[in-house]
Length: 232
Image 1 (cartoon, rainbow, N blue to C red):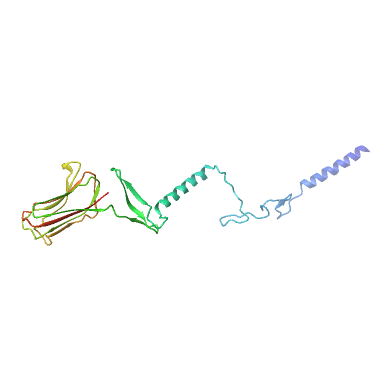
Image 2 (tube, rainbow, N blue to C red):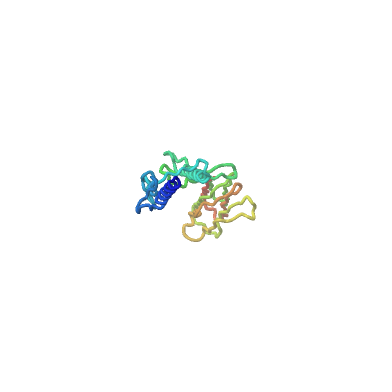
């Protein structure tokens, strides 16, 4: 009798387990044992692109993450560059400078109050003048690097003797490097009494270079020479 009772209990237990394990999950149900397979904190996750909302998971990056550190460094460099090129006050204090081999520093571009970059004046103009009625031999030779901006020559009368008026760079490297950058014969052509040499761009000259304006002036006309340059 006890054996029959045990068999009955065994059959009842096995039947219960079989029924429980083989029961199918109802169609359309997203929850198993109270765990929702689709929602996070009761909200369906957001997919594809779009704005942040309650369905977007929050991600935390470690403070010592190497990629974040690299991005931070790059952004700081961009910020520093912006500070160096955009004026922060009404005064044009930001700009681009060049340090010369003679130990001086020249600012050739600055930002105005609106942050626009503009070319600034290259030093203070230096004027060298000479007058007379004999041969012209006027020179400019500062003890610093400079730009040659312009040379003007006025003659009191048009010469008749054919001979050239020249402008020469007297190179510090020696006579082998001396270069005639302008030459004209005042005895030919119109406007011979007023000569103006202005290079398309100022000619840069290094420390030790000089500029020479020369003319034999055989006709002994009165002249006035001006050399305009700017030290770097």
